Length: 344
Image 1 (spheres, rainbow, N blue to C red):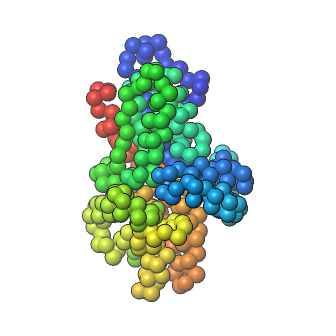
Image 2 (image 1 turned 60 degrees about the horizontal axis):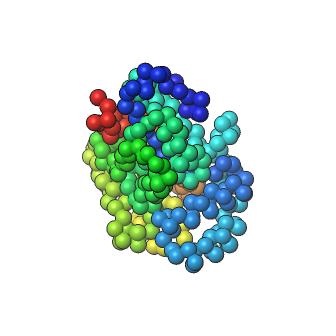
Image 3 (image 1 turned 90 degrees about the vertical axis):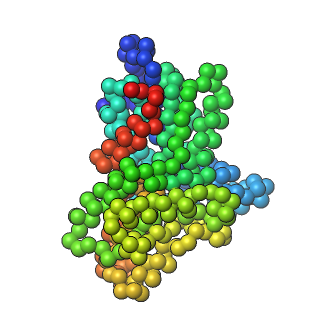
């Protein structure tokens, strides 16, 4: 396995060939579970004009005042519950790093270098672009690990990439990914992962919730295609698994702030399902490529407690694709498709 660090080097014979870099990019994470680390991360994340579309003169006093004073303390316990104590990193960082390392094994003989970065926090996109450039990667694919496109995720990754490219005199050729929300490669991986995880339970769920991260409704009204992409994923996955919409409904989680958000909200659907007599519920998060705070704590802790405390008998959380063989095969196929023309 190739170690992705500053001591890596390629053979002299490789310098005569076209060198391709691939950067896997995920959202980001604090460096620790302490107040200052979480505050620093949230400040960067919530200061992004694409994430919070409120004029800075109005938003920054609110953000730097009450939000960053109290929210880091509330999130600290949540991060502590999911933190990888062995690696001393968040699960998102651990999994994304492993994804890059394992995908690299598929490309060792093809002069393709796989690396990873975070949009907010470390390792930064700028740092990893510099690293790939230092390895003479004159062609770079940016693979945003967001299956469904949104200006708040995919677009802000592209913003960071192109902003840093402005500092280069000699820029590499760059490709970005748009969306793989209903790509057959992705849907097949989701189906296989769900079936594999559910086979580990004694009973089958009576309902499977497809939980996507929420988004303010006004962002969609302004032209963001995120809701359309989420619906496309849900429709394709139901078709692949032979499920109806009531058997596998789409829901949204992670509301924040006073805005009206996309509906239906997951808590409302959980309560409705309980009222309909559903006792065994499964939840999968098809908008996340790696388990993180929103899946491990919000879904598997908060929503599990909600369901079980109101009469549910079994709550089955289906982990994300993470660095499973299913995920790595999928990423290999997606990357191979995206770099066509750069490599035979």
